[in-house]
Length: 361
Image (cartoon, rainbow, N blue to C red; front, side, top):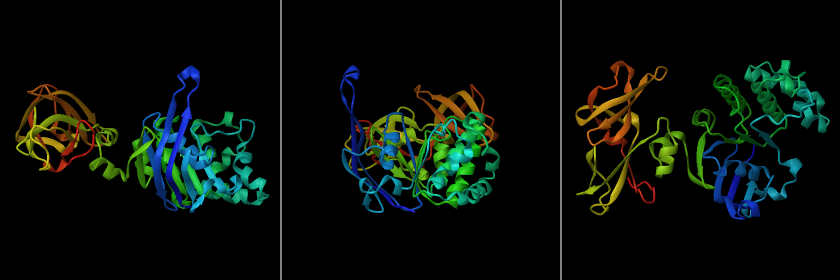
């Protein structure tokens, strides 16, 4: 296993003159250390630098400044053949004219270790329970999307990898196959504890597979933490709104006598050093707004039931015309047009500077 570190890494690309000739900063002064066997999920919007980061860690491109280190050794000093990188792409990236058996065993065959292939394939198949052996005689055109990804993952494992790099491997699969793939991959990562970077748009996938999650924006790490801390203790508005489904509610307001006041809710104590009248945005997760006899009056506009999770996502508007969402137990049977009173849980309040986006309490 391998410790991977990024030491103040930056990467820029120059656009062509036809595209304006601008310099694009893809990665901006990133630092990170991933211990042996750790799994880091990487979330971010399109263009945030996620795939560029994977290519940099793989050594496919070099940073303009800073270093990528494997066990303290700069990656550029490690010969390609000794890096031990297993990479899995969105589409499997299989050789179209090769049978899966040749694809999976290619690395071992190059090193004259063909005798290890049957045992390696049998172990992978046993761990995942997918019957990998019946796919080995097929070419990519004869495989479903899920089967191609299984072969791609088996190929990566057959390399004796020091580092795993996953670039949205299940994004092209339907929901049922994607869920099954996550379970199988989790078993493999438990059995083969390889230092891993996992790029995905799917927060459920990141939670299921990763020990920690990095949220990226504009080539930077906004926050790296467990999902629970990202959800409950975001460092800024971007992380607060990006993490979590349904999305957090945001209420504009200002400071009056060291307390926050908004159009619908008011009276919540905030940090004492904020000036009178300072604008402050209040963030509250839908499940932290609950019915209360002394709460603000609202009317239900729409109800979306989530039967498996046992709650209803309820869209409401207040007397001040603010619209927001609350999560209610299904047993309450909320109905469109119904009126009720609600208030936020004081323990679930998050305050942000609306200008900088930074968390202030």
